[in-house]
Figure 1: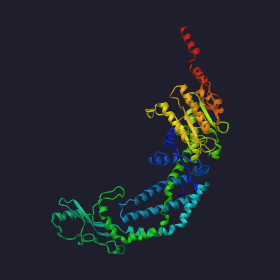
Figure 2: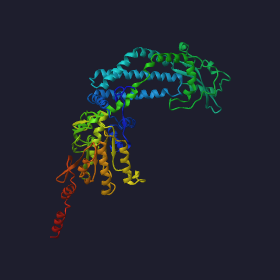
Figure 3: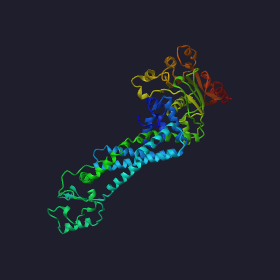
Figure 4: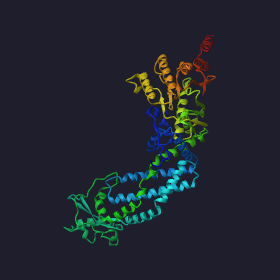
Length: 562
């Protein structure tokens, strides 16, 4: 396995989030907050669509993230490295283009190696200056130091400079062009390669003079004309200046290609130039063979991971600067199925606050343990149920990505995957109906989920009658208890939360508890607490606040009548 900042050596366990989870947890919203760059979004999206349950991997990532978070100079240096790695990747792709001539490909291969050496040298210098603490970053420092030490970069640079010098001596090419009867270029050929630039600015003037005086050469090889730019004998060692044949072929023209950036003239001279410079090409190949051990370019594969840590460290720093707590999650063994989070909040709200919105963010605590692992969450509409449900999912996601979580303290056992069940899209329910589609998706979740999974249900089964929805919902809760998952079931069905005794008397490994979003004096507080469902009392509080009880309305009517 290649070197990685996401995985320790010989460890690569990862699970993929399904499309429903990615949509329900608003991964696109997070990507918007991380970057506006389309290419960066693609790279980050690929990494953020996966979740790793391995505590060793999560701790490894968490250490790397902390180095990026606490060392701004590291982020700056790495951000400068990212476009250089991108250029290196593009050059590497160019080498695979079969249209490039041997000479042009090798020259770009030299550019590639030169930039690779620069990246290694720059990264080594940065990591030596910073007091990095994580195993991942220490391994990276050792890795680049070993490359620098074992690859003979000083000797390589000397060889590359010498080879580049040979190539750079080519300053101009003398070309002969055949014309058709309308004076359009028909075919072209090389007359000579020169180590000086062509400086005669009177070419068109002389051409017109020849035409006016009918001074056309008949049957004469232009390569032999002394007034034509002559071959330069001073470069004979490199074979520059040699005359290329006495006639022109008819197969020198070529189509322009975007991959190589070539044009018709470049294509016309490609093969002749390469043929002339066989010795130089051979020299370059010999140089490259001596350094074949550095052709892996492992740094290119680090670019997505570096980008991930840089962008997330920047965002978490902004959230913390806005006054919201962030912390590193303490990771426990998966088998414990434990979670305790203090002052939890939804990172989406924090991002909106960072972006200038005036938001009063309410924090909450949640604990998954032997006493309660399945929460049935009830409360009024727009009372914060969905925000809280998402917040639980974000906590596990960020923690298992290695990123600081939106809370003041978090201790958790990783989940092997997160499954969400939010209301079905109307466009997806044409064949089965909404209840059928929701039931089908719930069944599919249980096909895959394990006792180490996290289930987040948001107003599930709310599209049918209360009686029908409650019937199915009870079976779903019983199944979750039997499986042993951790779950939050956000629902409007208060009778579901009143069935705790029935649920907990059944066979299973996860106890069920009722939690509510709070309302005080008719005001939604968005605080979540362990309590039985309030039901009508919520409606009564709101009815009193807005004056829609029978007694209040009757009083208003009587007052108007009187």
